[in-house]
Image 1 (cartoon, rainbow, N blue to C red):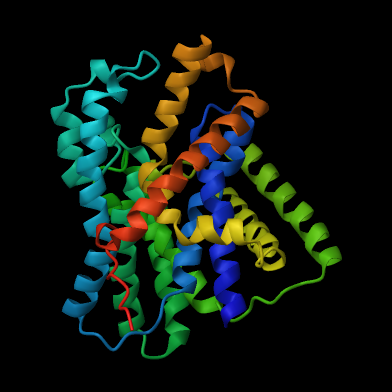
Image 2 (image 1 turned 135 degrees about the vertical axis):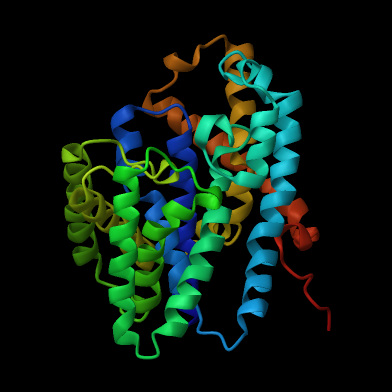
Length: 338
């Protein structure tokens, strides 16, 4: 069990690195490849740690609200203020053209429509995960026999995909439409948590190569670049094939590297990185723009992308150290001293 927990943290660590990398100035091909699976991976990993609960619906909602909505609102206000006074004025952003009331309202609505989340685009994940957790709680409770859960998930997947076709954008608050697709990956995680075991290096290398090739091909032939936040998936077969192949590839890597403390550390505090990497990344961009005199479109090569990613992650370390001292800001109780 301890090993299983470690590899989950490592998988989250790898995943959050890829999230930061995909939000940095990056080549379009690499960006499309990462967008094909990095968010489905996080919903899948969240499902793996789902535990059947005897809590009442009210108690369950309160628990999830404390763990997800409390940090969401705290850091939405913090990063909005930072955006208002600092990052919206950077010339490589479009902040000066946006009415500040729009992103302020986005704090409560949590949709990417009309720049509502421009102050911190990645933060949508927390409200969406909250909706997904509640939705799967009901699915699990209704399905007294687990064999019915896959049928509920298929139904959600069909509705979610239909919404991406017939509804122009992710317009409902808290990414409710996206949650219909996200819960499919969450449910898969909950149902398959026991199947993972550490493979040999030979099988791992061959499998990862095949899986990432499948992801690349699936995204290449998809009609659009996948954008889960915007409820944009393209062709359903290509989307699910790419998302699952990429996610399994990362999990296989994590199963072999579960002992790497640096990845485990990043995974354990992936919520901090998710909440704060966008403001930090904007500061790194500003240092490159003002300090080195480079335009952003000149820095979308792989060496620059790695530079942005590494420096942004290094900036997250002091943030993690500070927030470990005040876990309430992350919706966690302060550890009891014996």
